[in-house]
Amino acid sequence: MSGPPLESSITVGGCTLRNRLYRAPLLECAGNGPDTVETLIDELEPAAASGVGLIHQGATIVRADGGCAAPGMTRVSDPAFVSQLERLTDVIHAHGGAIALQLEYGGLRSMEVWHAGYRESNPDLEQLVVSRPPRVLRALDRVGFLELTPRVMDAKTVESLAADFGRAAAHAVDAGYDMIHLAGANMGIIQQFLSPFYNRREDEFGIDPETGSGVRFLELVHDEIRDRAGDVPLITKIPSEAAAPRVLRPRLSDENAVRTAVRLESIGYDGVVPVRCSVFWDMSIVRGAFPARAWRASHLRPGYIEAFGSRPRAIAVAAGNWLQSLKYRREPGWNADLARRVRNSVEIPVFLEGGLRERGELERYLGDAADLVGMGRPFYAEPRLPARLLGGTDETRVVCEDCNNCAVAQAGGAEGTCRTPSVLRRAGQLRKRDAYDTPSNE
Ligand SMILES: Cc1cc2nc3c(=O)[nH]c(=O)nc-3n(C[C@H](O)[C@H](O)[C@H](O)COP(=O)(O)O)c2cc1C
Image (cartoon, rainbow, N blue to C red; front, side, top):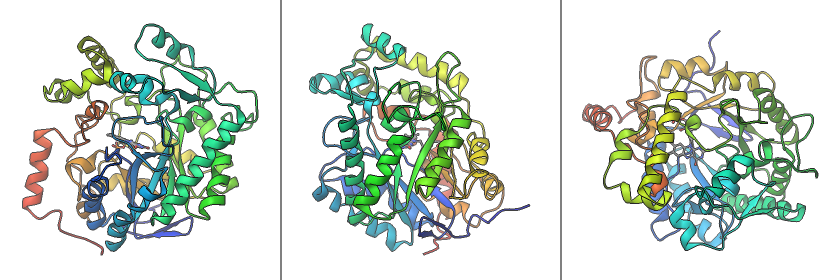
């Protein structure tokens, strides 16, 4: 049985999208400076101009202090600043596209935990945490690899953090965003609430026996967003931690992710993005090769040394990255079976991303494992990728080779961009053949 075509429209929580192809969130490192809006327009406009249905802007931070997971993240706590982003949303809308803002707070994934240079210039920053940090993080703290200054949130602080998500969503709606996307995975604070690896609370924000996840925080965030931002379409990533090494437990299973999705639908979420990841922020979310070129690049080295504290430590992190690359090879559509299980249990749209690379694959998953399909890394080499995929043949394939040279340099503050000459050459050849000129769907 064939599903809906990629080009067919779909409605997510009242927002009608012109097709089912989306650009997955990728940190833009646009910060909060005078060039932020221009940087975001440069990065995101080509996808809209070439016909994508929905763009997910990379994660932004809901508070004014701390909680940034990586260098250059944009904070969205100040309404005056967020109002400037209306210029971006206008540009996307002028091309017939839609744009979601992703909201995040780092907790134990914050730069003040792992980024040596940032910690040095912000020595007083504490981390808001769900419970006492897991043993393995405390061990890394003791040997000086991380620096933890955790503050376990009392119920009032949890409520105030949820209210920050609500306020940021309201600012986003005022600036013209079409959808709010919660960064529910990638080791952000939402995953830390959901996961029994982090959440050992005994109050109402602890692990819910029915879902096996600490879903109450997402319920509260939902209510705050509805109170402050109205009925804006609201979606979230939902992690299964099944990809984590076996020794790391307890953790979220696929079944917990499915039950969490069912609960979120019942309380009013409009869509979910199920992702299979680990309990940490690692290569399980960006499966592919070891990014040797990006680690070796001499101009990127100072950024790594600043981030990890010294050259030997940067080398140790690179070695860990290599080991992970052996475990987390790209498999086509690695979240598809989880997404299918979720989709069989809910009525709301299910978004699928992770390792999708060919138009034929996208169409096979539509109506089976997912209602919308997205890609992340392939947009770096091909910002106007939708022009090739929409209306292409089953064999139309991205030029991205999953080498991950785009991703790792972000830890050191460098922009996310394709750094692989053979891939860029191939994109250049396609550009010369006008492959990115049609269709525009405008
Ligand atoms: C450099 C980089 C930055 C990312 N930033 C985010 C982010 O801000 N929020 C998020 O939910 N996922 C983020 N992701 C994960 C992507 O959205 C996507 O799930 C992942 O890259 C797998 O899709 P792909 O195989 O098509 O790249 C990021 C991935 C990369 C490579």
